[in-house]
Amino acid sequence: MSTAAPTGVSILLVADPGLPTRRAHAVKEDLQALLNDSYHPPITVHVVTETLRLRPDHTLDLSTAVDLSEEYEHPDAVLLLTEIPRLTDGKPLIAEIFPTEQVAVVSCPTLGAFASLHRILHVLMSCTLRMKPTAERRDPTGFDRRWTQWSEVEDLPGHLALHSRATTGGVRTVCGMVAGNEPLRTVPTLSSALAAASATGAFGIFYSSIWAMSTYLSTPRLLGIGVLAMSAMIAWLILSNGLWDRPLRAGLARTVLLYNLSTVLTMALCVAALYLALVLLILAGGLIVIAPAYMADIIGEHPSFTTYLDIAWLSAAMGVVAGALGSSFDQSTDLRRLTHGQRERQRRYSEG
Image 1 (cartoon, rainbow, N blue to C red):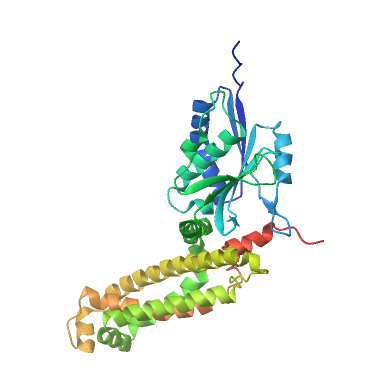
Image 2: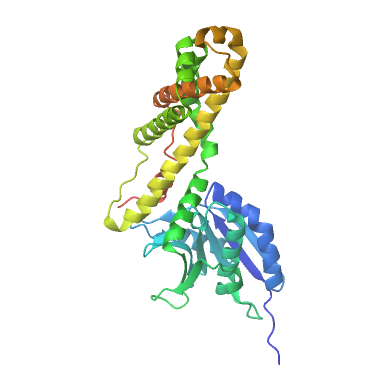
């Protein structure tokens, strides 16, 4: 007598607010299609937005997932998609399965910044197949990647962890954290910095001494001045907003290092975008305002497009320094929610 096939599968996908939620909605249809290929109908996938909380000892609090499971009539698997970068034994922890609660936690940053939707989809399927095997016992390793490895945690049968390699996984995690910080969405919050930078950079259009200096300086020196100005603004924004994290204990040193690297790279992208916008604005203004014949009288040679670009580049370097100072006087500019370390503090329950 043949065994009856399962009547279906119900999945509850719970995602952190922001980028994880958008990714969850983006993969929902593809996830349902893969589930249709593996399980018998009916197939249901619910997507819910909820912040995954942390206990004071930095361990995950799964009570929210358990409560949601009861609310959705105990689905076959609860998949938690979080922006928390997790590490164990120095290796990035991509996913972890808790068999008692029928919960799997997937960390978005550990999957990197590129092809992340495809990777998230496959990890979700890999976790689901391990928590609820199909009637035909489909092999879940088909959704695994060569740089990942499942291992069993010793405390409980069925408690599984998916790790990536320590070296390449660390780079991938930092890139994923930078993507999670969404630096390009942060640039508009630096409007005060852009205003101060534009006002200062505009002097380069009207002061002939800056024209002469930009013409005299070599290209490598001009590039060095721009890099130095951007580095100064990055350092100022990080220090003035308290974005540099320090480990509270030795065991968190590697995790905090990832936080700080992602913060520096995120701010570098923000400042680079601001600098590029400033160069384009000043270049457009210079081409409109400065007559070529008048500039030729000042610098002693016929100006080219490169001459205008050099003026814009040097003026922008002056502007970003003023922009860093201007951002500190804008009470509405709050960069503390930009970084993973600061957002993680908002997840923790208070001691006591």
